[in-house]
Length: 269
Image (tube, rainbow, N blue to C red; front, top):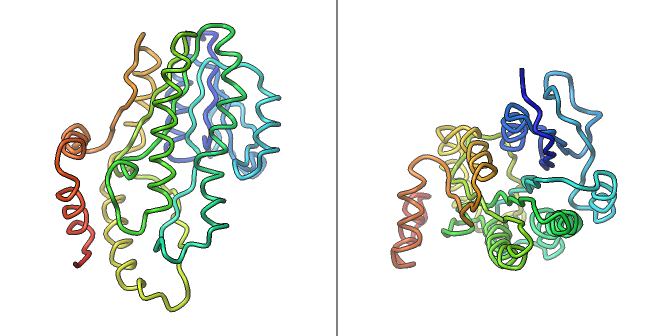
């Protein structure tokens, strides 16, 4: 029997991968869980988690974000997980496409957080978790759009954390290294691109790393750890050898980090 705690969590992107693992762990921990995806009606029974209330959310639409926030009202925990992972040369990325990705990865989560923070602040309690990425900390070729949006999430969360702490609200970032998920990478590249060969090699190596990466459960465990800690840390790196790699990224000269990443992904020059 699962003992209900009377706490409500909202997990975006809860139909698969990291979001699904987080939703399941919270359910098992006694939380009432609201999970979002773009079209809940399309979920087959095997994709649904018992106990999760599924609601529609399209982060690319400010109207959709506002509608969801109005519908759910107050939550004790917000896990901003849903996002996109584009891959391609920065030179060839259409600015409208860049704006669209930032809407999903940054502006949408910010809008949702703004809408739910007032309830947490007035009740002097609550937790906001952003699922970031170590790609926002270490340079990765052809991940400029994704990396930039996740770096922005990190900065947003760190500043927000100081602002809401006096009101009893906690803010943390969980930054995974490679996690074994089915999150598709949208290819953003011009026809006959001079980068095509290098991009193919980078993506192939990235796919191998993903196939041998940690299970999404490591992110779910980090979420539970944050919810059970009176004063959670602002930044949590998870994944295989996460502690060591995070330490190296933070303390080694940036030139060494860049050279290491270039070698890892087979980049020349």
